[in-house]
Length: 254
Image (cartoon, rainbow, N blue to C red; front, side):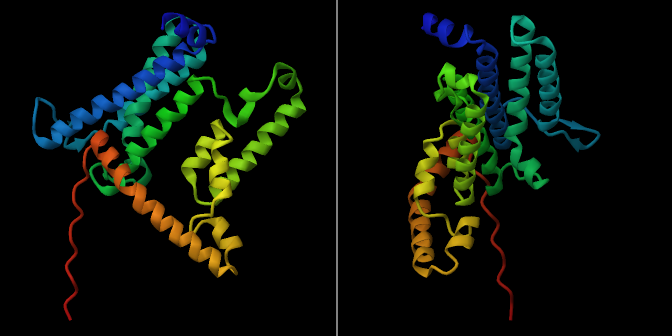
């Protein structure tokens, strides 16, 4: 294990990235544990308030992210300072993305259905950083030989082709596959050959006069969501806690 760590992480200069990822994941898990205890009224923890104002943990997260980011840029990629800044940045990023849904909606939706977006973004970010740490580079550059990397035109062509490839997957309404295809281009091939999701830009453009394709797209999306929505929600509930039940709306009286 030590030999693998030295050869694949320390020698390529990826130790700060590993420290940032570890700090990011641990911060998210610890934060979720604390917020769940606060929600249940257990333990010595409580919401932070100043003058009646609830201070969300995204605020110190932004401060730590700025400190860690600028510190890493100024301190280079090696030494104790670089490692410390990577940890600070990872902690800050964990606090910020734990409240991603709050930033997106500009509302305290932490324990609502919209709050699931924070868990999803954190899992997606950790997976992408883990792929980069494992040796994958964006847009398939890692698959190129040293001779090909010295050819700037070839590098630019590879990046542009894979970028358009990921953009086409995104246009089909498959955001997760599009993001992963940036790191692993072949992953996006799955989304590219399959039907676009209904309501996506691709479907609106190319399925407008193809009723059979629209019907197949809608049916496939229905079966896909029915198959994977349940396990995905249970996984998110296990990590981040189950959202509050949606209040039932009263029926209008005639």
